[in-house]
Image (cartoon, rainbow over all chains, first blue to last red):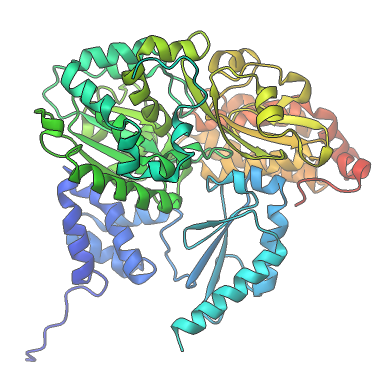
Length: 172
Length: 436
């Protein structure tokens, strides 16, 4: 017998649990905590692995399928890891009228990566998304939630260079 | 403040000064005076009557009279009542609520206090789309300020009225903007719209009476309480009270949000305010109310942009997402983008929408890529007709209406693509504005 006790949860760290508990009084029903709890997990770990979903179900005392059906329904929960910079490229009507479809192809070519994959350096994931509510800045992209637009090819080049430099600063 | 005689902007008047986003800046402009008036001088029923008089119609797209909606909440119900603010702005071409939250968050909070008081709710949730995290951060800041100043929490403004407002972050699903889909989502489930009746006013969030209103609708409430419902009604057209936030995008010189009197002619919004069609080109078509609204040809835009006039013109005001297309736009490609959206966002509950929307997308793609035969346009009309009105929520209609209007109004472009396996617009101009 070892005195070492395995932590019960790998993804539901004390910090994540504290965030969930801070929200509990907001809802009369624990199932309503699911989406905020999934956000807390994703913000801590970058994605929501299946194991984290199972842990959350156990923690809240709900069937695992309740968690998984939510994760698989909403586009913004990542079931696989994404790059440090998640770039959303809007391809909907207002943006496509201003050439967004070409920009998406340009960005994927420039990074040499398939949509939704991660570049080998772990820095970038590019995803075509539906309207993100910034049509006045079409063609618009979002980098980790920040709106940038209107953008053209040259600005995308600059952006990639800037983000790479920023990553080098953070990780020597 | 009494009724201002000449009004150029209401909500947007707060956008000219960045300081108006903070509590201090908002208070300097008379902020929270309307909430004080409602909570200390008016009964909840009086607030509802004032909003009914204002002819304030829901700005999320359906245009349902807000005061009437509030009056459906059973006052004697022993259950808690909820206010839910729909900040899931997701209809393509729509981006007004984002500005309300970024630049005038306290206006939304004050409107929520008044609305919650009117329906006897003590908890309100603001359901905000996950992609609007910048707005969520700003709203959370504003809520903190409002709590500290005693505008939220226990005993608001020294009265016996309590209210908590919580922000709830969505995670990327267009259907969560449908009001009952939103309720399901808030309850921690997939955003599957509910069969109605019962309507949310009686069986809503957590099976309790609930009012759901769009951000813009709520943001106009403080003005109505300050200056009166009759004054607000007089700013617009018959049965369409007040001002409206119009979103203009696409091929115009100055895309953006323009706040104008309800019923401002569509052509004026595009030409005078948004600067007209870009690059000196001619106008070809306009979608007046978000991408689900039937498209109008250039010769059909001399119409007041309000709920009733646009309905009469065969389209709809919807979310007032005005999408402008120039003469070099390939309408088949434009429809492909729209069809892709509704096929992608169908929640899958109802067969006509789940199956029909992807069929429509595949058929437009076949036309675009030279794989269609001449029967396609009629077949598309038939499929669209068979989705229309046969689904739980309006997403089915949203998938069908663009197809019906694009195919009927621009039929020669579709036929040309099918017959010649080339784009008529591209041949005439050498290129199109909306390349693949």
